[in-house]
Image 1 (cartoon, helix red, strand yellow):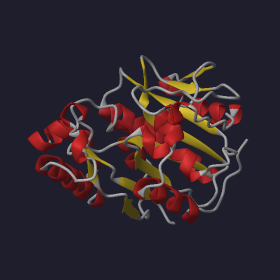
Image 2 (cartoon, rainbow, N blue to C red; image 1 turned 90 degrees about the vertical axis):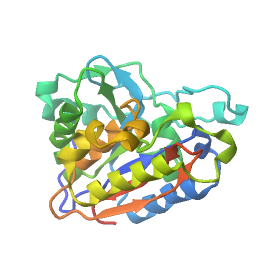
Image 3 (cartoon, one colour; image 1 turned 135 degrees about the vertical axis):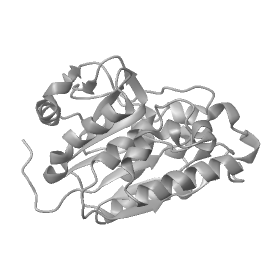
Image 4 (cartoon, one colour; image 1 turned 60 degrees about the vertical axis):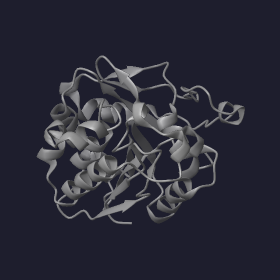
Length: 265
């Protein structure tokens, strides 16, 4: 079991973007590496990734999770990436115990998807820190996801790094692959700015009810899976926690890489 620590572990929301960020030396991968160098080395990691949606909540319970290549159309080098981080049965039991009313079930087959390993490969390249993933339950409302996030707060006292992996603005149907280095559309920048402002103002109710934030945000979040991991991280914010944004850039017109550290670095 994990012992309580005096210092709360920071929590992260990362805009993971393209899987190619796993193998490229770019400003985003360098941003992830820089954050890893500033926060305490975690005893284990819990990741909530946009790329694992289920009917009912699940947590990965396999001792040696595989590396899932859940994408297509990328160079072979990306499919050759392996990230053999171990699982952690003790952390699985902690999560199930502290969230009993959610009836989270252990999954003995699921590995790590690219929302998890593409980021953590850069942060912890030795793949020696145990990792567990929590699924996004289709049946939960945004409010219910936020409430579940709050129930995980005690993990911050046990040196568990909780990572939400998605993107604040994620509209693949409108991506312009010819402008991957040329920023974002006006509506995407406006949506990203509006959401960041609400985050800094601790207006979590507004962020939970994101569908009511106007046309720009509705375009930024056409489906919820890349946005919901953010709600878990906001739910874990304590009254004295600082907020630090990094990787604040739009790519492809309709994606933003905006990332967030909650807590001291």
